[in-house]
Image (cartoon, rainbow, N blue to C red; front, side, top):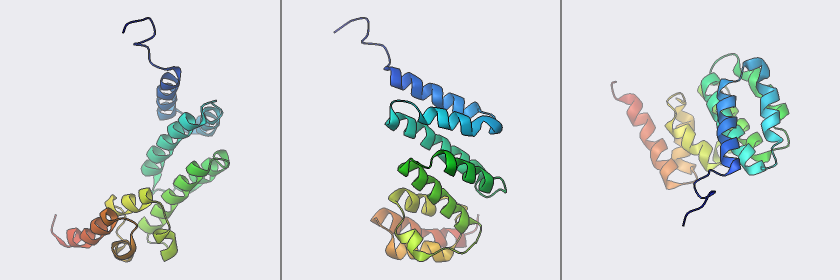
Length: 159
C-alpha cells in the first residue's frame, strides 16, 4: 500500500522527539518553564513520557550532588498534578537517600514500584547492605530478589 502519508511519522512522534531534544539542551534556568510547557501538550501520555525520561536523566546526573535537592523541589512544583511523574521523582529521592546513607523506612522500599526496586538493585551507588538484604527477602519480583541477593557477593569480590 502506498500513499502520501504512509511513510510520514505521526505528529506526536515528531513532538516527542523535539521535546526530548529540547529537554536535553535546556539551560538550568529555563528547565522548569520548558517542563511545564511540555506538560501542557494535548497528548498527556506522550508529554508525561517525555518529561519522565527527562526526570530520569536529570535525577541520575544530579543524584548524589548538592544541586539535587533544589532541582527536585522545583520539579515537584512543576509536576505536582501528574501522579506518575510525582511518584518517579519521589522514588529517585528515595534512591538518593539510600545512596547517601541517610535514614529510610523499610516500608518505603517494600511498597515502592517494580521500577524502583529494579533500580535499587542495579545502581552501583546503592551500597546499603540493609536495603539490599530487605529487597532480597521481600522484593516484589523474583528478578529483584535474585538481583538484590547477588549484590553483596559482588561487592565482596575484588575489582
